Picture 1 (cartoon, rainbow, N blue to C red):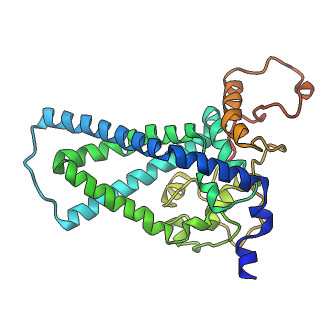
Picture 2: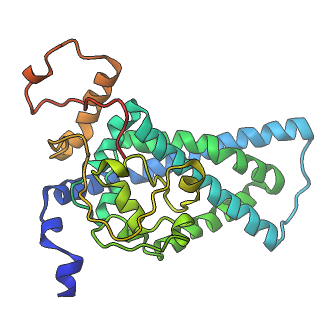
Picture 3: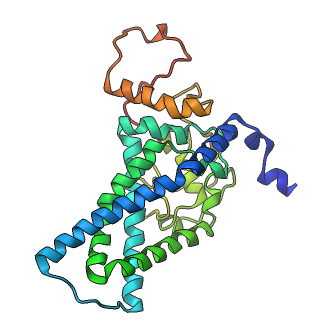
Amino acid sequence: MIAAFAFPRGVYWSRTFAVDVQIMVLDRLFLPMVWFARVLSTIAVAGMLAAGLTAMLGPMPVREGSALTYLVLATLLLLAMDFGTYVTHRLSHQVPLLWAFHRVHHSAEELNPLTLMRKHPVYNVLGVLVDCITVAPLQGVIVYLFGVPGELQLLAMANMGFIAFSFLASNLRHTHIWLSYGPVLDKILVSPALHQIHHSRAEKHFDTNYGEVLAIWDWLFGTHYQPREREDLEFGIGDEAVQPHPTLAAAMLEPFVYAWRTIRPHTSTNEDERPADQFEPDAQSRAHP
């Protein structure tokens, strides 16, 4: 009975789950390259900033930070990393060219834990670029003050924050299992219910709950949606009736066609004459959640 509730046949025998598995395998193959690019890029930018600080202010003597200092800096680094994720996510919804690639994640019509990795590589590249703006400056200051070993310790502490969040049911975000932390804590941490609402096809849920770990960014920037009670949700892209990514190939290639058509307006004046199975962007210029 519990197994049937936790692993419903309709979710784990769906077309969405099959595509999720394929994208997960592809992601596992290229994940080391993605993380290498992310770490190398932010470290390179941080190193240049640290070198600039050294040139302007002179070298800092080698120092050991106190435990409290490291805790404060690790917290700031965690905030910077999470804010970068919020920025990446929100841009991917509100810039039509970027939405072309983030649609892959939202075309999932059933949610399961593997949906977390249902991301187009272009979305990951965007994340690297945003990290160079939101995370690298703080890393540069840390390298200047404490050197590379200090930076690595702080990165490890910040990553532990993300791991701790995973134990607070973050893996339930991409499932049918509703779990809200309540109206107070939901404004601090992103509960599974908040993220499930983000995946909803309902128009009232559009452009809400972009946060990854912390909900404070949504609260501060006016994108927080707090449910009063459990809501019945239907997942998928709200303004597209036909599944645009029924296969792995479609999930990887269709976004480029969609992106091209957002840049170059259609020359055809009769939208109804085009075949229904063609790759094409929706009529809205505003991205759905």
